[in-house]
Image 1 (cartoon, rainbow, N blue to C red):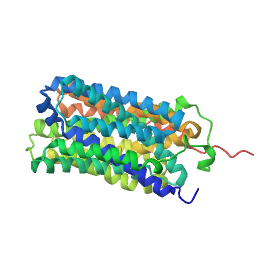
Image 2: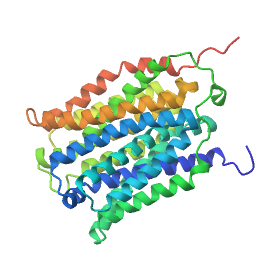
Image 3: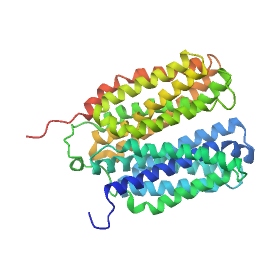
Image 4: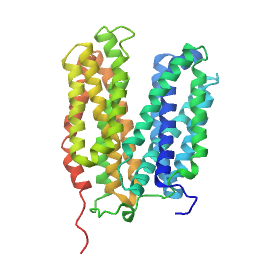
Length: 392
């Protein structure tokens, strides 16, 4: 390492800033949806179609990150993705024809997916460089920034500045981090076995993707269910007041943040398989409590428990993927990242469809079933992450 090259800790901070830029931008877009609808004259059906297109574009961005990382390294993918996110956020602040607005959001979606995948690639790289767990804290930067974005949006709107100012500020932050953080990102293209200092079992890439991808799919199934429907459930099904209904989502996000701030200390001590099992069970208990006890207090506590599990499960799965396939970590993580979009869509769409025939209360049993069905996968996770015998 040269005298001017950033240390591992400095690289972790720059990558954490990338996570913060991602969380800030995504939360700004989600909380600005009412403003977008009013300004562009969009109805709920068209908004749903646009969101679906953004998710599909994000999946394409994840694949693009894989290609860019293989050719130039994941820091190129991260910087390019953040630039696309920043530009897309900035352009959404202008009133444009609907077709142009949709195109801008699709471009934003491509950037979002590229950042999604490349941040996890970078996180695994810097974790290998440091030789200790840091993925939970990196994801905590995303969660903290998302909470800050929601509060800033509220403050800007209440102060009369308008939601566009908040979205534009998030876009500017992403552009600054893309440019200023360039030298701070990890230059390596993938984790190499000699960087980790461990001997790894020979496992197929496909198996790693399926095992870790299943954990990501299930985590985002629960995340999307709570994020999309917790407020609606509290308000419509449990008759919570307008001021009380958002508390379920707030409790969920706060619990996610707490679990991620502590996860880097807990997971290495108990091991990934035990942590994954506990996370799945805690999530299942949380969603099950919300479905079993029709009270506002029980639902809020249940959503908080779900957050505790999801907060650990996502960084754990990405870390395990990088650990199990060190010579192909960028490729594997990009493919594992695709599972998050499937889980997010299923949690948002299927719960909505079930809400009509059975009600949202029973619909929250869907993630419970998914979480319990994922428990056998932990056995495969144990095989993937167990060190192989050292060569004689």
